[in-house]
Length: 132
Image (cartoon, rainbow, N blue to C red; front, side, top):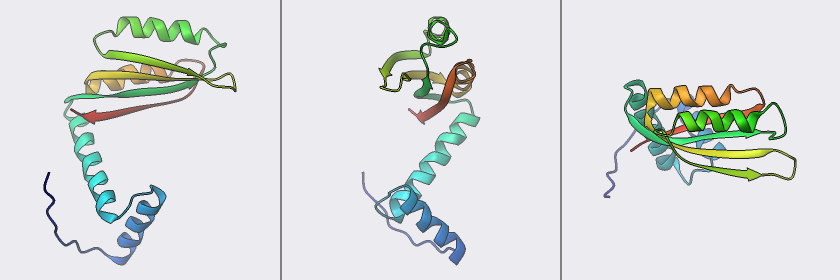
């Protein structure tokens, strides 16, 4: 893919914020950061339009508490059209990191992730979506 160069004018405080964003997120340069921000904006706009997207629901939980594993399996069995695969990683601290690969409309995936992340026993959860 070819790259087109163009100039951008920013106020000093906005430029400083961009440079902090570059550093905080370990981007090689401002161009990579701006590319990432534009892509994120495009994806979020697709979410609002309820476009077809793919992504992952990442959850951390203690598998020994609150029937969480059973509840996760129940949800996954009722959403076989959206769930492509699941990977579980058991950590030394008795926690489980689960990555659920998903595809569907943004609205479907948001609803599914909310259902999973709100389960009693989930310590942390996040939905990541990308345009496809």
